[in-house]
Amino acid sequence: MEKKIRIYNKRISYFLKNSTRAKRMRIAVYHDGKVTVTIPKNLHKNIEVEKYILNKSKWIDSKLAFYSNLRKKEKIKPIKFNVNNKKKALGLIKERIKNFQTKCKFDFDQIRIKNQKTIWGSCSRRNNLSFNFKILLLKPKIRDYVIVHELSHCKIKNHSRKFWLQVEKVLPGYKDIKEGLNKYSLSLF
Image 1 (cartoon, rainbow, N blue to C red):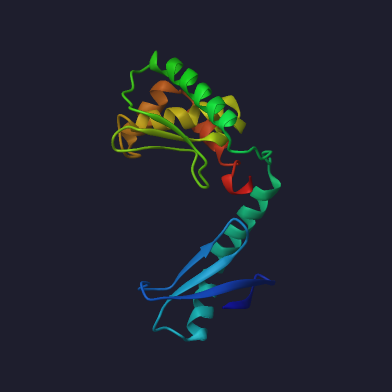
Image 2 (image 1 turned 120 degrees about the horizontal axis):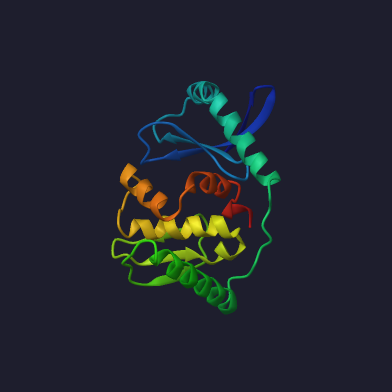
């Protein structure tokens, strides 16, 4: 059910969602500006919900501003997920991996190209690498960061200090490059 509330002199809409699995209230702000408040099934007091939203108003406002700015930032032209783009992405990734193998030997099994909605890449427990075909649209340094990040997961399966040292070993200055990736949102394609 959609409701409205005023925070920081702005009227925002939010969707109230009852959940049998929820143990407490929670708020989610999405890239399209949608705000959802999930409440436990047994809680129906609008006053408590509004009070909760007002307590979180600073956070909500910052997330809405973040997504609004993200939509204004550099937009990437959409491309289709087809055989040709899949082959291009696979070829590019294999070429870059060869380059990184000279700096550090990575053991991985398969490379898959997918059309993922929320991630640029992943590494499975069995060291299968998956990359989003939209990696083709990234600037070369940012593309390299995504590839090195997933290759490093072949050695270290978490984001510990040891993991980041591994990334830095292969890609010095990765921190600045990582910041550049933040302006690309897959949801904006």
